Amino acid sequence: MSYTAPITQTRTLNKQDYKTLALSALGGALEFYDFIIFVFFSITISHLFFPDDMPAWLSQVQTFGIFAAGYLIRPFGGIVMAHFGDLFGRKRMFTLSILLMALPTLFIGCLPTYTHIGIFAPLLLLLMRLCQGLAVGGEVPGAWTFVAEHVPKDKIGLACGILTSGLSLGILLGSLVSTVMNKSISPEQLIDWGWRIPFILGGIFGLIAMYLRRWLKETPIFLEIQKRKQQELVNKIPVVTVITQYLPQTILSMLLTWVLSAGIMVIMLMTPILLQKSFGYSPIDALQGNILAIIGLIISCTFYGMMMDKCAMGKVILIGCILAALAIAIFYLSLDNHQLLFITYPLAGFCVGIVGSFAYFMVKVFPTQIRYSGVSFSFNMAYAIAGGLTPLLISFLTDFVNKMAPAMYVVGLFALGALIGLFLLINNNSQKYIANDIG
Image 1 (cartoon, helix red, strand yellow):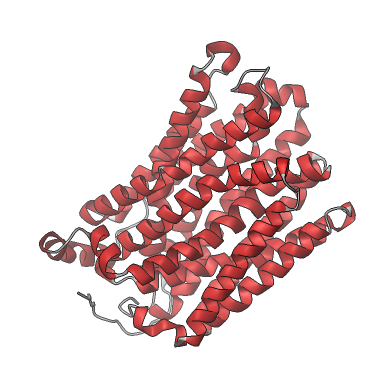
Image 2: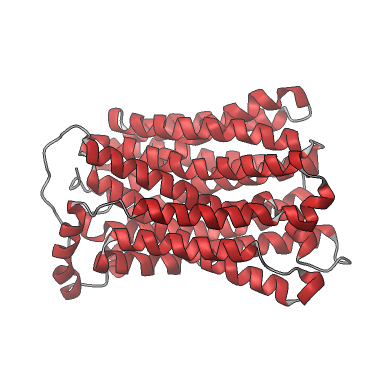
């Protein structure tokens, strides 16, 4: 069974659209900061929350395992948030997701370490990460769906790009805070008390985001959701409909999410650590290079989103993924020359921004009545598997196989993204899969 919805005429962005985009992007940035600040201090956390006599590589792997747990629980959070988002409204779910993110982040900053409570320290840390995973599982797909159904149909790519740039801004905030902490205090002070500050700040950021979103009004999309209720109660559960009737769209969305997870997880989040461990860079140089790369990512996410509104979807994905693969290969091959870091890393960051266009594909291939569930299921299931296992895989391959393994992994996945773009281009962007019912 296919669903249809009235197609409204094209219009320009109005004041309410800009307000919705700004609040959604800023709130997403503050919430995503809370989720990823963990990885910037993973080395410190591995020393504090595991026994001193544990090998460094093993404590690092276990720390990444706790980080991965936040990804593994995301599908459950996404499905639950999608259900109640349709029932009670997107705004309420946005508020709940921020609260569920802010409080655990604040608690992490106050946790006693292994020295004080032994095995309960990593267990409590794991519990906090699980709560964060539940929150982010509903935030990202819900925000993409919300803004896509709010703006004109010829501005959906721009809206999704801006929102993804907002999430990238959260990574930038994490990198900036990490850089300031490493520059302003000694390594001893960082281990003693300094590592707590970014997490406490994250809790404050979360409360600010919650306050900001109180100004985010329910748009006409919620009225449409209300109309769907009776249809969804009569028909199958939305997730079941997604799997049984929209399997090709789901598979393609999951594959693109896999590519996205590699670009964000490895190039943006893990590379500063890999630069220090495998290539001999100082923490300051690694973080400063990372800041430039994230700025490039923020700019290009919006750029590629705009391109999706103006050009064939398959062509944008094909060209963008090829450029990303080339830039990442050049970046890693040049790492032995430290002077090139501030040129090749920002270039790689900019090219990774093609992932900002993937949300456009996801919101377009699922019809209105199941869009939230379709995007949430596809994105969170793929991110749970790929994003959850990637830190462990990369850590293992780097330590025991080859320090260039991260580059080979990410370049291979962007090659997969290019093949998906080619498939869409050959099949005229697979119009039979597109649900042209938003805008």
